[in-house]
Image 1 (tube, rainbow, N blue to C red):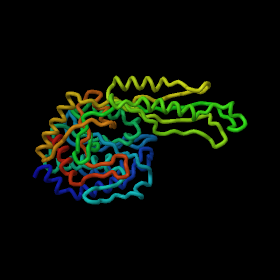
Image 2: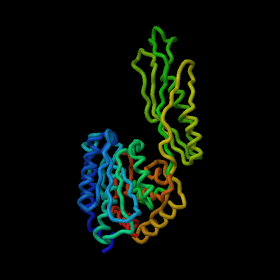
Image 3: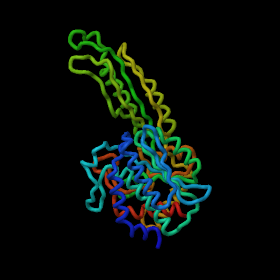
Image 4: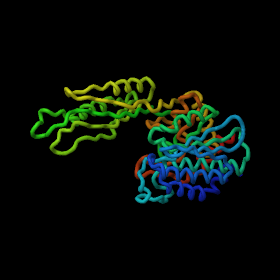
Amino acid sequence: MNFLEYLIGHQAEMVDTLRTVVSYESPSREKILLDRLTAYLAELFCSIGADVKILEQPEAGNHLRASWGEGKEQALILCHIDTVWPMGEIDKRPFRIVDGKAYGPGVYDMKGGLVQAIFALKSIIAIQKKVPRKIVFLCTSDEEIGSQTSCSLIEAEAHNSAFVLVPEPAANGKQGAAKLSRNAWGMYDMKIIGRSAHAGGDHNKGINALEEMAHQILKLQAMTDYDIGTTVSVGEAQGGAGYNVIPGLATAKVDLRASTKKELAAAHVKIMGLTPFLKGAAVIVTGGINRPPLLATKANTLLYEKARRYAEELGFELPGVHVGGVSDGNLTSAIGVATLDGIGAVGDGAHAVHENVLLEALAPRAALLAKLLAE
């Protein structure tokens, strides 16, 4: 029996596990919920003989490290358990299967890939028994919000790894493309300080923070240049206190994506250097670059080519593409460790209510992971 045959034979079990993992809600900022999922995964890894350690966090969700096998070298499987969905979303959209696709919050990003990776390990344990190097899973709880508490853990594990596999969702729908390169990411908080005043009696004495913010939003949005791969988006804005008050304060969250280090640095300087349009207003920007770009380095490309050949042996194609989103693979690639990203679930709708996973692709994609780890 080979890996693919084993996994096809255990497809129903894989789907049941996916149902359970999706049913454990895991919003990035809900520590209690995240810790419940981490505890479940710890039990799951223990049941297959892995050495498990829960990496407790005082405020953020706990992280999980699970390892199997021996040897000085290790292969790292990098997963995140958090999702963008708020608590209670599972009640609105419970796990369900329709026309060969599984639906539910986080099923595609990235609980489907996590389950595939776990079953890849199970197939190795069942068939091969031994592997060339230790297999290490690092399951983190804050990828969707910038990996603030997990970044150092990710980099430390990567430094000890021969290569890194990131079972983030594949790209391009049914094509199931690997993500050979990704944009960089910057996260900024903008604070506008004006002067409050009565909108009727003292209109001329006020400095409208929302008016200033409107100018700044237009300036920020105009930084987007699709030709060079840079986008800037104001994703959240707040301010004001009612009809009759000139607002003295407004805030906004700004998202920056860039395809190269040069363009990232240039856009960062512009954002940090914003100046007010209105006399007397103040603009304060904090934050900065969260992840460098993931580039198609020589090491990454060699790893991808090996995966592409294995995929052909398994009966499917594995194209490679560039995407605008980021992952923790950005971090591992940036420190020079061979990284292959986007080899998780095949489906559609990351961060969207229609997100889904193609069930027929679960076993072949898990088999690909198994071959990369075992050979």
